[in-house]
Length: 140
Image 1 (cartoon, rainbow, N blue to C red):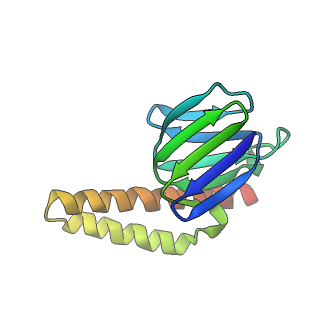
Image 2: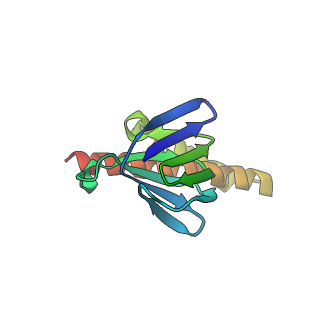
């Protein structure tokens, strides 16, 4: 099946894969070739890609994604998100520092708008750190 991961900056991934695990409001869904057509919402989280059927979990590729739209067809999975960061592109120390800064913003928030902005940043950097940890764990 063809995976198309598209961000605001353009196409991040466009290649054949065996499986895609996508975070949705109802939980994660696994998409394989021949999947029934589906349009849904992706939630911020971890997108996992299995390139070949024989690949075990240690060979999954991970992306930290923002929320977006999912369009599934029997031969294609198209995922449209604002941003998607591949595990190798995430610098763990920078994400950890950004998470700490976001937590300080949350603690210093004086209104609901500031609190929601800080919460979104906390979610974003928490997801990025989890993707970096998964990559580190699977490289061992």
